[in-house]
Length: 83
Image 1: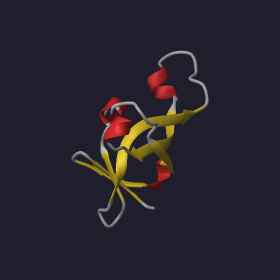
Image 2: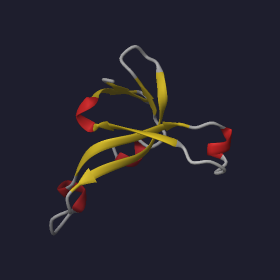
Image 3: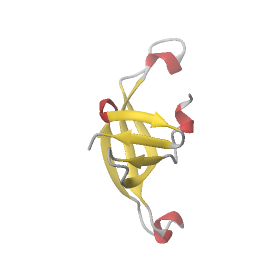
């Protein structure tokens, strides 16, 4: 799976409650010489709920962060987190 495939996926808690959609991924450190895809690890998932005004760009999306280690499962188009 490519990281770009995670963008826009639905984020839910263990009980299936909708928490938002993935808006960004964060990684730590700088890539070593060579292939940067293998040198970096994702550390955080940024997600948020966006209404129509946010989707049209009139307001910023209220973002929330969760550590990558808190992801329980990635299934179909949904990411399940332990929150």
